[in-house]
Length: 221
View: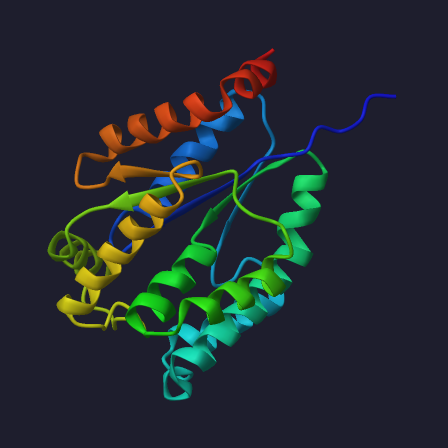
C-alpha cells in the first residue's frame, strides 16, 4: 500500500489591492494542470466558524477591542480554519492555497497595531501548532496603487475595516510585509504586483516551480 504524500501549503500575502485573490485562482489552475488536487481558501475565514468571525472583524465591530482583541479573534478563526480545512486537506495530499495567513496578523496587528513581537510569537506557537506554509508569496506594490485598485474594485461600495485605514498606514503595512520577507527568505518570495496580471502570474509560477519542481513534475506524470 502506497502512503499518501503530504500536500503543500502556499500562502499569498500583501496589502490591499495587490491582486492576491486573482493570483490565487490562477496559481490553483496551473497546479491543477499538473494533475494536483488543490484547495482554495482565505483568511479570515475558510471554515464555517471562521467565516462567522470574518464578518465581525471586517465589519469593524471588533475595532474597539484594539489590536490585541482583533489578534485574538484572528487566532480563533485561524485555529478553526486549520483544524477544519487546512490540516485535513494536507493530510489527504492536497495542495492548499490561502489568501492571507499568519503573516497578515504580524503586519496588521503587529506593525500597524504595535503589538509586541514576543506576544505575536507566543500566539503563533499556540495557534499554528507547527503548521506553517511551505511557500509564502508576498505581492508587493506601492500603497497608492494598491488603494486605487481597492477603490476601483469596490465600485463605490463601503470600505472594510482595513481598507478604510489611511495611506500612511498602508505604507507601514507594505514595509511590514517586506520586513517579513527579509526575515524569512527561505519561505518568502517577493513578487512585483505592480506589473500586469499575466506578468505577476508568470513570476508566481516561476517561484512555485523553483521551490517544488520535482513534485510538480511527478504530479503531471
